[in-house]
Amino acid sequence: MATSDIAGIDPVLGFALVGALGVGSQWLAWRLRMPAIVLMLLAGLIIGPVLGVLDPSRDFGNLMSPIIAIAVAIILFEGGLTLNFASLRDAAVGVRRLVLVGAPLGWAVSAAALHYVAGLSWETSTVFGGIMIVTGPTVIAPLLRQARLRRRPAALLQWEAIVNDPVGALAAVLAFEVVIVLQTATGAGAAIQDLVTGILVASVLGLAAGWALSKAFSLGKVPEYMKVPVLFVLLLGVFALSDAVLHESGLLAVTLMGIYIANANLPSYAELRRFKEHATVMLVSGVFILLAANMTRETLMSIDWSTLAFVAVVILIARPVAVLMSLALSDIPWNERLLVAFTGPRGVVLVAVAGLFGERLASIGIEDGTEVSKLAFALVAASVVLHGFTLQPIARWLGLIATERPGVLIVGGSPWSVALAQALQKMDLPVAIADPNHSHLRGAREAGVETFFGDILAEVAEDRLDLVRYEKIIAATDNDAYNTLVATDLAPEFGRENVFQLRRAKESSSRHALPPSLGGRKFGPDDTYLEANARMQGDCEFRVTRLSDEFTIEDWRETHPGAMVLADIGSAGELRLLGPEDEPRETVDMRILSLLPARPERKESQKREPNGKSDDHGKTDDKG
Image 1 (cartoon, one colour):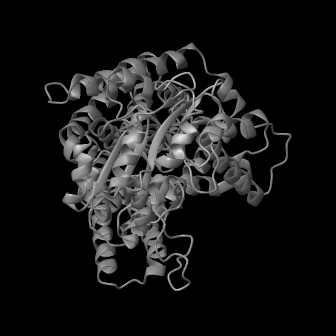
Image 2 (cartoon, helix red, strand yellow):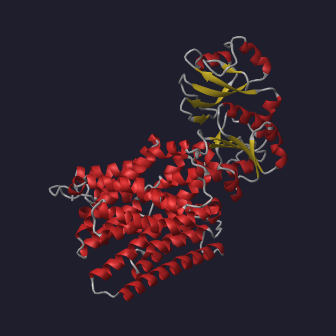
Image 3 (cartoon, one colour):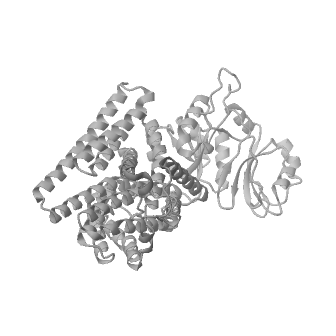
């Protein structure tokens, strides 16, 4: 463990420390745009084996194992809660092959790598090889958000990660049962019977619990304020009951429960999933820091060339071989196959389950079972760091990036929306206009702007409109209530700071005032729908201007005294939409999108504007 001469800290203080470091690591990773798991791993190692501040086994005692087990169960349930079958349409064949063919192949190749490269016994290699099937959903999800992949390769990676998590745990259970048969006098028939019984019980419990909960929620048998507590208690009960029949089968039960609920079309599904996502952020960070802090200095110092060689073989040979063989002769393009083959980050489930089975192997006399935790951490750290920094470049090289720059989705077709979309296109940003009224999109189609006919909140929008291409939302229909609904519904997914809407016509009236939790941010001059479109009829104009050392924001303000900056985009492509109280960044190498007043005011200012119509060297782009 950590240095034995340091007294243990109070458990409450220990939990507070783990929570602060976990959430702090997630926030810092968001700010630095890097994988959070890397910072969590470093934080755990620093407070654990490096400084000896926290030793979870010493400070938490017997609570350590049940804490990890329950946290992993909730994480897998949340993963199952994201598996809506409608989102699998484009990737169904590939996911089936990766699970039914790729998982057994990966198990066999990984076990061979453990035995021949890492030098483990066949017993330990077989058990750990089953666990290595998993590719952590809690790791792949943030990587996919950061890389902004196209829909099908992203779906392949996400579904494989979530489905294979319980499959990998059950593979380890199967292998462990076989090892027990070989090491003890337990009969093979009894072991197989226990295994089959456990899987059947887990499947029945998980699906039955999902059905019962869905029925109770749909029929109004549970009030809204009790839905999350009831869900949480039922989840723990299902996990505990299934685990009592066959250890680790509870992971299968809670995953099936989550999948059933995800496809039950519950009205409260969004709220349930949102709560579970928040809980998962806390649990993933906490579990990872606990497991990292629980390592010993001796374990870290024992990492040698065989450990590094094992990690390299798994990432560069075992994973690609299993994926490419499972997807052979399928209709999945080669660039997508290669991306999936070389993308296999491991996460918290691998570390947690590997540590558990490593201890159990050691307890029945297999000495190298203690090596499992070290290899698991090395594989997780290497795969996360590697894929975290290479996934986007490789995807770009293979042509699988949905968009180089995140764009803007405008909800509502109108002359104002079309003019704004054309200006944003001149900033090299993806732009689309969505509207449930087909006639409202005529102007956008004629202007060459991408359109979506339908309700942006409908499920079909996720299938036909690649939402990953867009980072900002502007709700600008002629229906104020609908704008508020769109902004409120999409805010948790896109982030409240990225969702805007036109000002409601009766917003100033106390009878129509809404709480801050509803609606989006103010955009531009904070016009209503009628005011914004009246500006277009009054000959106002959107314009894109490049700023430089020769033509700064101060110069622009002098030449356009009546104009307002609506957005700015830096040299790295980061877009900011501005409200009436926001100011553009004070940098020289960027472009701004502005709203110029009607022509009588503008003509005078153009006399003082620098010559040239290019978008370079501090000149103003007069095309906008």
